[in-house]
Image (cartoon, rainbow over all chains, first blue to last red; front, side, top):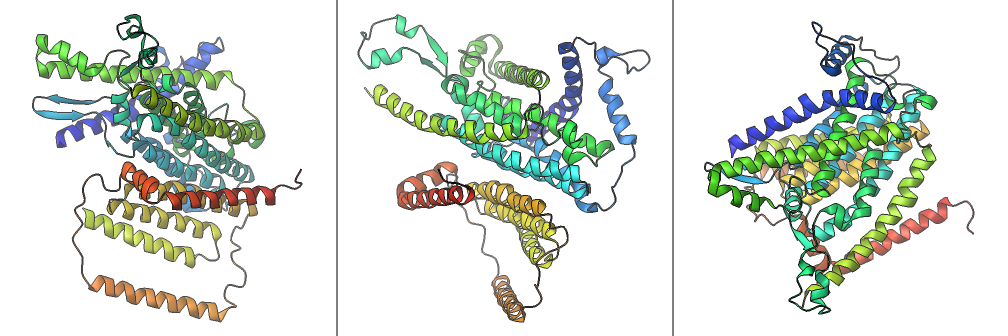
Length: 386
Length: 166
């Protein structure tokens, strides 16, 4: 047990801290350049090696760490100091409950590819996310700056509003899966269902009809709950305060909003928090809606059982694990790409538009979704009973 | 491990609670102490195997209600002002001292009584499923009544906030 914990912790650390956050700056630069018909980051070099601009994150970090760390007059020193850490910690620790693979038995040891397999996994993420509000809202207040103050008032109102939407949009999914544990959701999403199976249950076609069994779909969240998938993603992106929802920063109106008084690495921590959050959002969406670590129509047990005769149980498990991690990371990368696309194609919403979207569109729609999902579940139970 | 965590959370909860009262001149500091107190309480709930309650404590109290407190304090810009005339009410002060003294005596008695061992509960205790089953079978009437009360509160807020009812 202990070895697998260490293994898992190292993996998370490597992925989140060392790879994703710095590489995200590169992805962001290159993708925006691509979309705006520019070349993008290509100047930083070590001994003439430019590596497609991959040296830039290193240059960024050196620049940020060596910059002067300013403390504005009249600032609340302690709160000004700790706010960046309050902002970045939730983003890092929320990766603990996101599973990037199932449970594998190899050479007598059990490897579960999730750091904390909590019964209330999604709730943990929501709770951690609600703490993140403090990092942003205190930052604007502590700097003794009126623009910062406006930013922190905006950020607190926006994040509180979208927390409501985030919680309510996915209730339908919880009702279908009947669990809050993300690894259970991953296992459930490996199953498939027959689209026209109800014809047999209702007796409208005879039980021997073959074509009914042909069309099956994986029980992915996005197939069972297509509209909530997009609403949930919208709400999460608004919670992350990146464009088009970056009214708390709004550099054309309130300069930089809540982190206006931060310089150097403290400013960098806010940026890093946002980027890590992009990865967390992608991981959460992949785990809840896009089948987690599994391939569609290909449950993991099938992969392992078909590989076992050739390679033996241990190697088969190992191969399945490697495949699972790669599939999961592939989904995460695709979702990160999508979020970047949105970020670089949409202009910033006006503040009242952001609030209207949260309260007047997302919330009523998701409430209606809960009722409709409940009716749907009842109908399915009634039909499949016979 | 559990005992250590218990002491950390207890001291943080009590310290936060004292901080809320002691920072009467600075509303923001007071609210931040309240956050510390709420988070520590959530930690204590988790230690008592009530993980769901602990998380709801973080989500609702630390993550939403105190954020709204802070929001209002910032909106009114109560920087450094604090409660006016807090020391002009000797009776209230006396009552406060008496309450603290009574609480202190109780605390000392509890501590003197020694520790009970940590309970051994089965893994289903305190899970989301167990709480949901309890709420929607045994306590379904209470849930409904609470729902109606909340709805009344929401309607009242709408009526109060709306300048002109059509």
